[in-house]
Length: 262
Image (cartoon, rainbow, N blue to C red; front, top):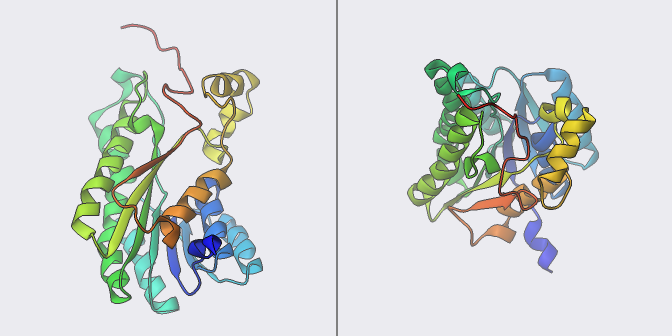
């Protein structure tokens, strides 16, 4: 049956930024389809909540709390996967982000910090994950990018540039790792995560975001997680080096900061 292609029975996945939002929804989705998961974020209480939901699916979640900007913490996730499960099949690089800032407030140091958090961390994890994935034949890497990696708007120079870098990193690394490991990304549009709470809790800003999105709403994390499942499973077995746009049809930023001309 076609739905069998989405099964991940016996597989193991690492997911970063998995305490809330897209990462949490993706961890639960993969578990519902049979995967055990190693989940990481800064806050243990958030991870415990996700792990309890994973347990209800009959699968197991190993939690790692720490600063995911620390490359040693990122590398430790693969050690935990090996110790706890003896294999690794899927990596979901979801950690990332950068607060939009006006041009003159975007220092070189801030840009470097954004690049580190959105791109370098993913590469550090992938470098140590790939050897373990190859021990069992290969697998799938899914990088969570953003619509802001392809559209332009004032205030987004750091966030947009680094997400664009992550998207193209995906294309480049897919060539390095083919044919045994597939590498794809999701360019997510505005999604109802904790990072957007300050926006979604303000009626005027929420209305703006919905109005500037052709489907006139903000995505649920589960809608992005469905894309993660597709790319991680055999349902997406003939995709590599692709950026799947799950953005409600967005062609312009859905949040305009109304920054004035210089």
